[in-house]
Image 1: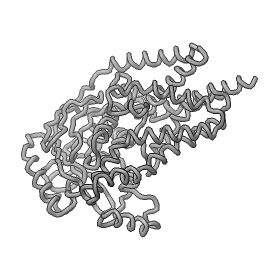
Image 2: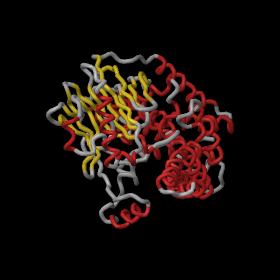
Image 3: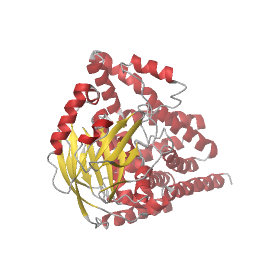
Image 4: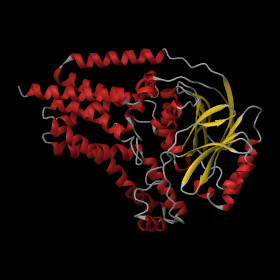
Length: 469
């Protein structure tokens, strides 16, 4: 039920209700092992539903490109991705086991699980293997409460949902009113805050955002790339005076052809072992950004040097020509072009809040997400787009998206799509504002959310001690 209240569904804000049912069930288990096992099953199922679009993608890859019968490709695709779903379930199971060991009273476990959930979501944003897909806070995107993201990021909204779910269960089981009234007041304050936010004012600017529609594998072939190249040049001819042309991720596969790109431009550029975006003024590269978070086990592979032989064998077995891992970028410096600082980041970077945060802290006046969404399908396209919208709220910057497949868009600083291009190939004449200033989230990061998690855990400790008296 929790997965059916996730993005991109319009009723996603109801996620607090199935979460409350889950926490109620888990907190009543008799042993830590039982808590962990039930958590593992529940969260594995959650990700199997939320990430089912990956199964669809793998099925299409096996049946269309791999030549397998569709009936065989479905179970093989599900089998291939099951370890991912089970691994995510294992992370939550470990958290639940630790909480159940720390707190023995059911009510204490209830609040401990809420606090532990927040801490776990925070850990999923860290390191080269970060995978914060499916965070609870995003489910409030279609409510005014999402505007609280400029205070404590999307993680603060996760804390609000988790605490509210615990409060509902606490009230249902004990009739204690104080927690549910306190959380109800927090929702009202959040709604009031969200309803009173207005779009920021700043100098107007304009860009030409391209949307191409090429198969990601065909794009990498010589004929496919040339066709894509000519399409991008043709679409760029729609450029109006004053517009910066924005091409998508790896739109330029060969650095020597950068000189052909219409300028001024921001474009994805493929380089060996790096996935890069650059600013181009017609004569020189004005700045660059290397993808900070290559997709785990898709672009970035742990111990790729020591395990090169193993990874190469797996790639060859799947029909890929070579094993070509990427390495995370280390700089968050905005790209200067035409007197404007662009906070450019690439594809998967858009779901890692810290990337946009650091770009804005270093002076970015607008955020630019260049992406190849040809790997996504169905829900995946819209989940990626919706999560990226929250970066606009956290930093109070416009977000521009140029994509291959996916959603090309100009998103205002309230996270609202101002202009969209969702199908076919085309170009979007984006009109946006250059904004500055620092939000509370930019200054504090996830500290407010982590403090909230600490309070939940301290409250759980207090309840546990009281139960033993």
